[in-house]
Image (cartoon, rainbow, N blue to C red; front, side, top):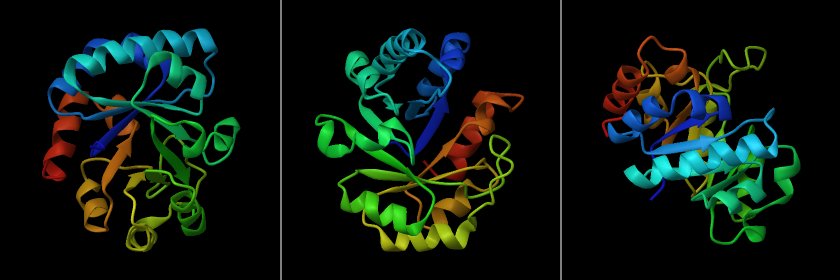
Length: 201
């Protein structure tokens, strides 16, 4: 089963915050995605192997973004293709055995991803995001249009936190994906538990 909460992490965050991540998965965080555009292969492998050990202990879904070779070597549950980049060519048809997702930024891209056979899409940005402050947010109405059109699960990403996670679910999102709501909060575990409560999980 796909997770309802998907935390996006970098290699450095995996290495530096492994204890917090394990506490979070034990407390109910059910999905982690390794996404690091700056890391080299060695760093990705190190973080990937550490995530595999962590997630296997708590039966947590985990995926690798963009790097299919790392997903294969580290035996992740899922592989995620970015909207653009090398991973885009590695569609579901080229990576059997993985739960395959795709990042999308428009309804047309989302429909194409579903047609190509992806299991889910990450739609962003829904709200203003500190990670990408220059991107214009799509808003809840746009999210609702995507979720009502697709038959596959849609995750809301971009500025999602405990104050708006419920609204994303109300707009039809299967789940939420987040970064800042966890790592930039004063208490990551409390923030995660608050979001879980808002999602009524």
